[in-house]
Amino acid sequence: MLFQYVMESDTGKKREVNEDRVAVLKRTDGLMLALVADGMGGHNAGDVASEMTVTAMSKHFLEADSENFASVESKKRWLDDKVQLINSEVYSYAEGHPECKGMGTTLIAVLIENNLCVVCHIGDSRVYKFNGKGEQVTRDHSYVNVLVDSGEISEEEAEDHPKKNWIVRALGTERGIEGDMVELELSDSSYLLICTDGLSNKVSKEEIADIVASHSALSQKGQDLVDLANDKGGEDNISFVLLAPKAGEV
Image (cartoon, rainbow, N blue to C red; front, top):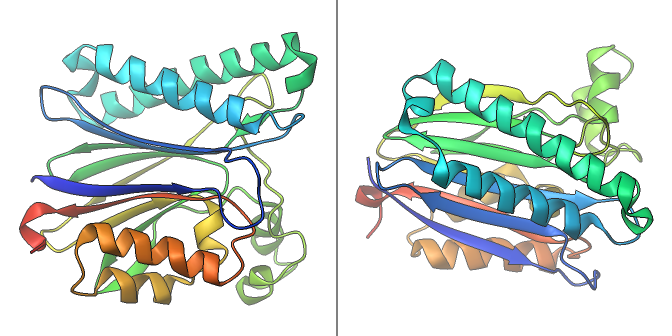
């Protein structure tokens, strides 16, 4: 399956610095890697954490032997190994640079081969799959989801909770890290959206689905998502990768 994609990373209307980083890479063997990272912490050092993470993941991916991606399990092992390595590098950098103390980043890394995706997820950036209606593939590593899991609040209450943006897992903030792994398959009519909370906190899944289902070109769909998030306040950086099968686009 061949894909086309649009990448957007907009500073938004309130922030002065864009701490998000996005990338899509393709190897000569056809394997793709999509990356989204939302940096945070330190004295405006979130952009350092996200930049280090995306740059390192990209380099490791392009230089890796193909045997690392021979199966779903080997893909998961490769993702886990690289996340552990980069987490250690970001953590050590922050420890050695006082201006970066406490910095970290969310990370979504999606390995794509034909119609099969292997997702590694840390933090509250998200992956959605759209095929008519939308499905949230990842589950936020957030304080409110801990409360939901313990039965203290409902899913509906979590949506408007004052501590909704508190995350409980981020790359680079502790010596050790573990990413959640998810597998999913895409059909010829599927769209895959990988985004930071600057989009998901402002634009509902239903609103995203409407834009994705429109007859606009893929690039216009990307711009429409950015515009809608900014129209609704644009308090945060707005970044995402939207992928679609080439056969599904005019």
